[in-house]
Image 1: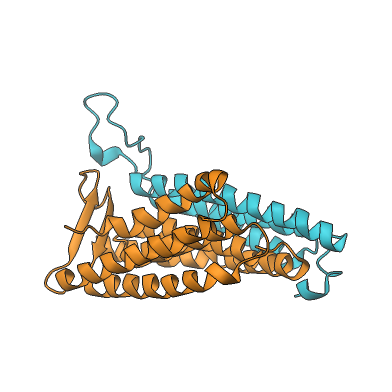
Image 2: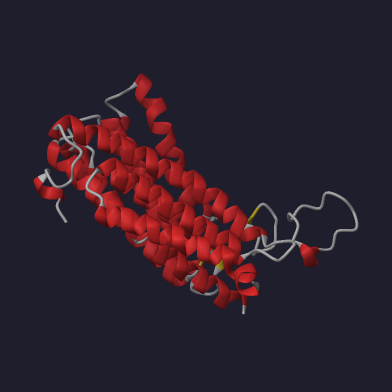
Length: 184
Length: 119
């Protein structure tokens, strides 16, 4: 009884739980990302055997697909989310010892948000949610570039943000084209 | 006249997008570049809304009986744009906070004077 929603809900929920948890135990916060991403890896591997037969389509809220938030967990999407969870899990284990400077609990929060966005991009079933998850991915990566707040980091983050936002119109146009193809 | 009637929103949207792109590419002040980013965002939002618009259409809400769905505008671009406005505000706030930190480090917002920011 595994649901693809868990792949997005667990990292997102634990990302927002991290600042609360940091109020009590600031030193133990760094163990949350490996736990959440290990859970994601297990769920993705369990799902993978199931979706090879037929894809799991989840419509949240009980609406019909053009109007609801729907997730399509096909073989490719679940494979990609398993790869994201595996790489994220290994990187978060490395980050246990590596991240010592700066506001570390914010690093772990942004890191989990980044992986939530990436997982959402590969699992989403419509353009609307592709846009939303892509923006989650983008904003947390802008913030992660500027994480230490030093001269080079801030300067690169400004550059990355402007370059990223400048190509927005073409990205929107592509999404719109995809949408009109789907409706045709 | 009918040309303007049909395409006025598209003309406005692409005008806003071009003004925003011009501001981003040409201006040297980082605050002006961020303003250009905002204008670009508004243009894209207007474009998306005008794609889903029907002439003399009503809001897609069943407020009173007797309204038929044929005369309603497409609700999906409107929901998308509502989300896009919120995300645009988030990106604007992030860009302005980065501009504050950049000013603290370099003492200037002129992109010509910051060596790594030249383009």
